Length: 338
Ligand code: BGC
Image (cartoon, rainbow, N blue to C red; front, side, top):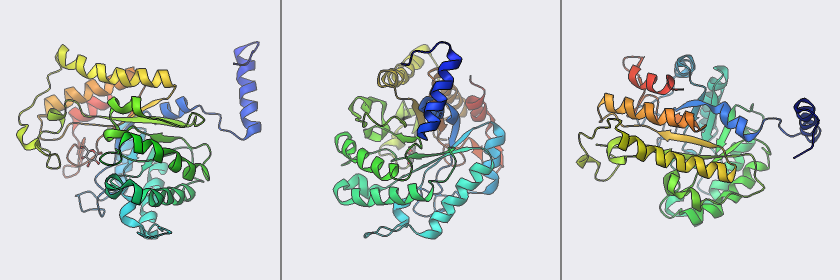
């Protein structure tokens, strides 16, 4: 800590020091706070091909999201399906142009946008065979977007799992950071723990201590049998029917304990937290889903997490693309909470 005569002098010294060093003035905590309230624009660019999972990005989506009061979009992207399998692993220019377009739309609508690597299933199954390719993808993505404004954030990898264990993931993180930092020394980079970005795996996460411009992300779907009842992609979920969430004290305490665990870890490690996914699938009743969503968003706000709801207009959708209208109970649950 510098010794300063007054807070104003201290702020001025800090500002001048940063400017002289060519470093960003914004702290990583402030960069996380700027993300604020977001929504995942999902099931589009992380599908094997856009439209295959029922969502084709529309220009008006960005405006609708902004006008509702969100400040950020998380844009899941399956880069691995649009790049050469062999070195130099070149990303298909047509696909990259589509991502450029989405970033342009977000920026024009004054939305922050998080670009990630999503659904690189081969990497989860076989990290040894895919690590070099993943790093090459990040070199290309980072170079491509190095001149974009600070409203563009990078997230290294969605939900490591399977053979990409927490331990193995810890060895991949520095390799990917190196690929990104060559062209983007200060851009905030979002990184989550292993086991599907689980809060319970935060203790196993190892981040390079010299890396200060990192936001840590977690995903939250507890109780899973409620949020994923009937989800076709989850084994056994067809057995979970008519699960409700009533917001009883016991239900709230369980959720609060988990989220507070993430907050505690963040404080201890001096890492800001971004709750990058949470949501309840449309098989649940709307009253339960809205109650659950309101509670989780409210807790995230209380704990100073930034967040992004999973997701905009598909199976968890807060927006109904056929009716061209928000599902008001979900939208209110997200945006009315303070
Ligand atoms: C997965 C989606 C899934 C969602 C909720 C995401 O991280 O990529 O496929 O729908 O989590 O389960």
